[in-house]
Length: 315
Image (tube, rainbow, N blue to C red; front, top):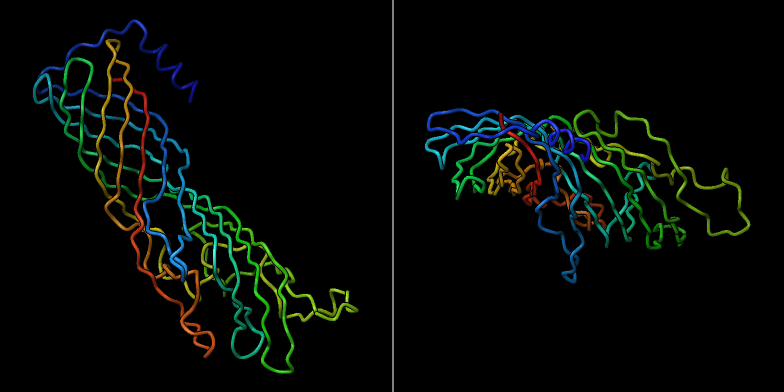
C-alpha cells in the first residue's frame, strides 16, 4: 500500500487539476484499505450470555471511477471495484458434538466449544453515488451499491471440550479428550461431508488406566482433524454465502489541487448475505435425550459492514 501511494504521488506531481465543467466526464482510479466485519446478532446461552462476536479485518479495494458533473459543485459518481470483505468470527460457550456411527443413533455430547474463523469474501462492487461539493476540495457523497461475490474462503480452528456422560448400558462413563479441528473452508468449491474423506483423530481415552495402546481404544470415537465448509451438513444446498450483496454508502473526500485525493466512506449491507439453510444453532439440538437430533434453525440476518480509507486521482 505504501508503494502504491508513492507511485500515485509521483504520477500526479506537477499535474494541475482543472475544475470540472457541467456535462463533463472525468475518469480516475481508487485504491485503499477495507476495514470489514459482519453486522450480525449473537446467539445467546440459556443465561442470556452473548456467545458470538465479529471483529474487524483489514482487506483492500481497487477500481476505476467515473465522475459526471451536473454543475461545477455536484453530480454523480460510478465505480467498479474489487472489494475484499469478511471478518473475524468467534464463538465461545455451550455447544455439542455428535459421535457418528457408534450405534444406530449418533452419540450426543454436551460441552464447551470455541470457534475462531477468519473469513475473506471478494466482491465486484458497483457503487452509484450523488456528490455535493462544499468547495473546490471537499465533497460529501452518498448512494448505493450492488456487489457480486467472486471468491469466499475461511480459515481457523474449532475446539471442543466435552462433558462426561454414560453410554446407557453397563454404566460406562465416557470422557472424550479435548480436541481441535482445523477449519479450511472454500465456500464456493467444498462439498458435503459424505463425499469427502477426512483424516481422523482419536478423541476417546478408556477409563481403565491399564490400557495405554492406541489400538485398544474404541475405534468409533474419532473426530476429523481438518474439515471443509460443509462438514456439518448432510448435503449441500447452494453456497453458504449468497452471490449478491447490496447496500448503502456515505462518505467524504478531499481533493488536492494536483488531482490526488483521499477519502473515507462507510458501506452498510442491506441484504442477508448468508444462506438460511446453514444457519443452525451451535448451542444444542432439539431434544437429544429422546434421540431427536434435528438441528435448530436461527434464520438471523448477517450483513456486510465495511469502512474504506482510500487514495485516488482523476485525469
